[in-house]
Length: 611
Image (spheres, one colour):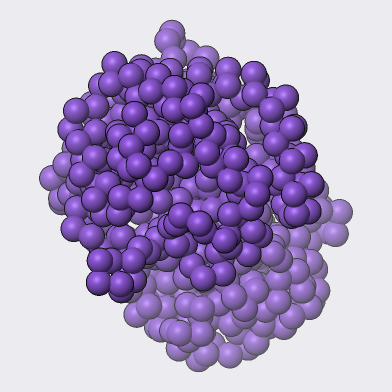
């Protein structure tokens, strides 16, 4: 199985996502026999060196395509956006150079990279798996230096589009899964929870008196540590303020180990408060983490208010593996809180409340037996999130997705033709839109447009647009096919249906790629029809129904042109399958020409043959 992964962060990036992704990809190669290609950013410090947009290398069996991008200061809004867009363009180019994959995987760094991955998947006829490490724009919305209503709206649309089109979605926690389903419209059947992990064989409980602790003078004091990125989401001002509240406890040492965008500001705050027992240590390499974690008596995990389910602090899993207790300053709905309750391995505090955080630290400082109890539980909990088990879960998802029947590979010429003709049609038909909108509104005062979920290529839903031709509450009895003399059809709607002008707004669906000009009719997910015996049945239960979703649904097609209007949908499937087998660009042109002829004669609402 060939897998192509898109994410800017990868080895040797020392961020948690890059490290986890490198472990995942290398294990998929070594333990599961997959061929893995990663489309990622340049190595830290390599920006601007060499020529070309993409550089190729190999590490531990993983092919790496490094896409060049700008390296402006990401603490500034403009710099971060420039970095995102430049990497996106280079990654789009790199994806075209990868061997044709069976599955394409996208993470969320940057949040728009899924669009390049989705394009690569559709181009190869591969399945698309979307791994949500963060949810946007929820994350950016809470960060002072990255606020823009326009950007938030764009990221919201991108996120929903990727969730709607993904064959599989991986959430890194249960709360994130709920946010995806309830807030992003994800299909619950396609969402799987796979937590991040720690390597329990590499990170083991170490004695307090170890080489790292001796080198940094951490053997004797009670060490309260935060390890990892010193960024915008961890709410580390609360850590510093809690240290200030306990400055009278000389036996407590506070350590911030790592680096990030807020390190300078935090250091200035520590200096301003005169906190001599708050120290900054550099990020430690993977091989030194066991001793570094062992030097801590307890850890602090922080997450800003409002980010529960949008970010899952991956540092938690290393802390569990090290067998250390912690105080988590997080919301009750956070994944960290759920794990803490389930395994009794730490204490909780409200996010942003330095007083409560200080009291929890003091409680553990004075009760070393409680520390040992929570630490032992933490190590046992780590076994539920060990690296081999989590990688195995990813391998199962990828194999399930890769072994599903692939959609028919879409013709680039057909897609270009659809986009060009739909764009031209939208421009030329603009005056007609205004006239039809006025007629519909004057007819009964109801809404002009009617939107409805329809099933697209690969079985993915999309919102289909039409001019409303029925009474506003026509769907109250379910998605029934229109019949001759149907009282739900309005007076204006009868003319719209006969001329097919009611479907004019679907030019937008064609322009954005949800539909094509020619293909099987787009049906609603739960469409029903009366059988010959009078019983109602779901069309999706008809054998072979899913084959219609191998190609984009169309505005017109063989069934629409040649079948009588009152032929049962289940019989129209034969026409749809015929089109899938014999489709060609010239057949599309012929069907489009016939459709214009039928429109001119006003025969679309005719019950018998139209040609």
